Structure formats: structure tokens, C-alpha cells
Length: 81
Image (cartoon, rainbow, N blue to C red; front, side, top):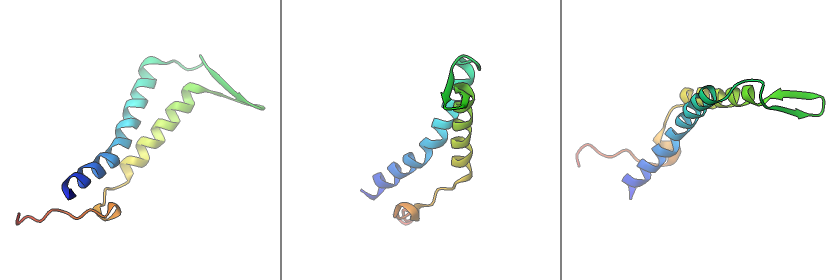
């Protein structure tokens, strides 16, 4: 059970950079700026730049972070086994 918990916690940790990279690549490859505008009150933003910034921030923050098994309360396997 401990092995599966460690695998699942690593998947939970590593899916954030994958989502950031794939989302950023998809946005840059298949969309163009200036097509969709989002307006809230007097502020009007381009949806292209909003998604580029959001995926870039997700990718940057997930790459700066580090995986620590203690955060997930997962013990590292002993090398004797």
C-alpha cells in the first residue's frame, strides 16, 4: 500500500507541470490573440493573453517547487528490501 501511495503522490505532484506545458503549447499552437475579448466592467482583456499568463504561471510555480515525501507523509523505501 505504501508503494502505491508514493506513486499516487508523485503523480499528483508531477501533473501540474504537465498541465502547464501542454496548456501553454496548445494555446500558442491553436489560438491567436485578438479573437476573443473578455470584458468585466471597464476592464477588457484578451482571452489569449489571459490563458498564456495563467499556464505560464502554473508551469513556473510547479517547476520551482520541489517534491518532498514528508509533505505527503510517505516513507521512502528501504534499500535493504
